[in-house]
Length: 337
Image (tube, rainbow, N blue to C red):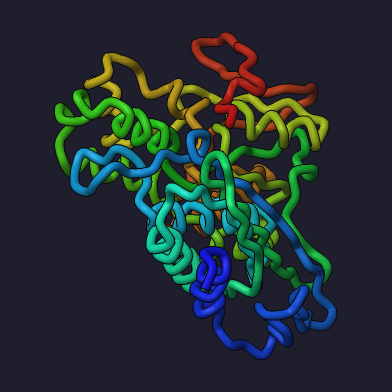
């Protein structure tokens, strides 16, 4: 059996039987049984070795990059986070992977098992895809198809002046984790528990699917986006689509203890990681002022910690950071992949 056929066979073995997948792997295309009176929501993300992840050399700590299982978790999470930002339910996923000859089939098998397991933990089925050889880096593309009920979904274009801006969790931790992975000499100076937390936040992000669905169901968000490039860029996209200005208040940006510890080791402040680090995959959303407390509490009931109210929506355009009575524009100053 050729290498590509073996890969296809191993990935096909991971596909679960489900009534919604009428025709799965084995034909030219998948046939899906879409629920009646629902909209389909489709997203796709590509991860490129050397750009979005580095492969782990060996095992143990300090980490030097992503294991096969880490790549599987991340490929699933970045797509599922897009579903969360839309308030959608992920249903099916399609994997395309370009594999260099230097990467063993066992690595791809472990990656695919992790991907499939992560997807299934959120109710999403791996339903098909493609494999090819690559003369360059490992390239993973995942497409996820989800659904929404009642003709409703969250989007980036609903923010209105007077709304408040909320964040579901700690920002900047993924960027700090990446910095620790890239500088193992300094990583050894960080307490092990802090180091593991920050590195896990980068290597194995958790999409906020339950929160996105709840915000949509309860009508407690006027707009929403996931924090993939940092709020300086992510909220700039949201502000642009909504035709508004967003003002973030420096003193309201949440700083975790782990992030503060890492910043001291690196001789910096957490602010740049928070605003521009990216890949935290928390949700950023806006809510009417009179609903913001309920919206924050809803997040707390799901995630165990109230959402932080970090800013407000105003007339104008762009994203600004407010501190000591001054506003500085930070639009699109986030992480670029």
